[in-house]
Every structure is written in C-alpha cells, then in structure tokens.
Image (cartoon, rainbow, N blue to C red; front, top):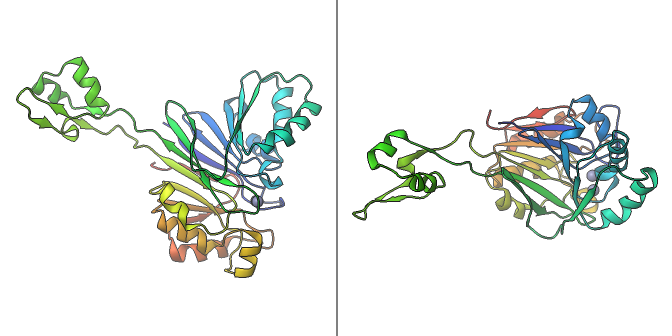
Length: 306
Ligand SMILES: [Zn+2]
Ligand SMILES: [Zn+2]
C-alpha cells in the first residue's frame, strides 16, 4: 500500500537551473495529492513520471508566487489534454479571485470542473477526508496568511486472531465490532481486551506534514506529534535574527528544533535561499540537533514505514 512522497521543487523564491520552486506530491495508494504548485510543477510531474490523471487534489499553503504560479499552466494543460475528472483546489479564499480569471481567459470552456475549497489559514481544522486518509491545516506565521498541511492515514481495521473466534464462539456481529476496536464482554461479565483478540494490520498508519514558509513556531509541534515524515522549510543556514524576523522564514536549526519537539521520525528540509549554492551546510547544522535530517533536492522520494 503506497505512501510515497516525491519532491518536485525545493528552492525558495526563484527557480535555479538545479531547483524548481516549492512543490511536493504525495502518492497514497495511487491517488496523487499535490502540495503547493510553484512555476514549472507540470514539467516536474512529467520528468518524475507522476500521472496527470491521478492528480485530483491540490493544496496551496499561501499566495506567494513560488507556491502557486504553476497552477495556471497546469490547469491549461489539463484542459488541452481533455481532462474530465473534477479538480479540487484547497487554498486561501483569495486564490479563486486571482486565479480563476486567468484560467478562464486561457482555457475557454473547461472540459472539467474545478472546486475551490476555502481554507482558513488561522485555523487548525480537518479540511479533507476520504476512506483512507485525512488532511488537517496547520496555522503558520509568515508575511501573508499561510498554513501547512498534515496528511494522516486512518487506522485500518484490525485482524482478528482465528483461535479467538473458536475459543469464544464469536458471532459475526461480535467479530465486526472487535475488528473496529471494541473489547469483548462475556456472559459472566468478564471483559477480554481488544489487544488480546486482534493483531494490527500492517503497515501501521503513516503521516506526512508539510510546514511551508514560516517564522520559527514551536507551537506547531504538538499538532503533528509523532509524524513519520516532516518537511519543514529552512530558507537560511545561519541563525541571523534580523534576517529571520524580517523575512518570516526559518533557519536549519529552527526546523530541526521543531522536528525534535514533534518527535518526528524523519526531517526533510528545503526552500533554500538562492544565496546558497549547496544545501550541505543546512543539513549539517540541522543534523546536530536532529540527526535523521535530509536536505532535499528535486526528484527525491520518501516512503515512510518501508
Ligand atoms: Zn516561499
Ligand atoms: Zn512565502
């Protein structure tokens, strides 16, 4: 059961010959979820062989160009390709006002419907849910309203131990409720705990948090506690207080602090300022606090729990 993240863009404000601006794609059982869509994201989708037809949900963290200017081109290509399935875009309400006229101008008569889902970046709320997964908004602190996104798989039904079915002569109704997590109460009132009756379905539920542009914000740690894969921006390598507070960005050390506080399993850092020619320094600084850190580059893939 796939849960795989592909990095399509890892640079900050401007693209370079090596790095595109922000864009991630999470493949959850062959459904693609895009997070941010910097310029050129459609080229990266092609390059890293992610199918356009599997992409129905796009989440935008904030309305800075390096996070959303790829959308008009991507939507225009969908239209040229004769897409028919609905496209869902989750973003600050202003995105629709800005983007829709551009899309309408270039794509007369869309062949598919676009549903805009308003996200309030100040709220920590569940904004999407399907059979296998839910997505929560994580309020951040940037120059414009910004939120991160937390993708969590739902727990799967447990497996019942065959020997227990025989031992307690379980009915179909009892089996259904035990698989959903209930304990069993015998006729004499004895309670048999669920964990004695079941085994966990593997793989265990996986999670991924995308912490977009933000000032150091330790209060997000409890909202993403135990996350498997934490992406946190680390625009700057140094802790230059003046620059950090003026730009509302984070340093590599601050990203690592959040990962440590959140007890993340792995930290990915990106959104590097174009002033650096390499991200090796960022990685070194972060690893001093959080050893399992990777400074990402475009095309890297991560599958937690494998
Ligand atoms: Zn940015
Ligand atoms: Zn920004």
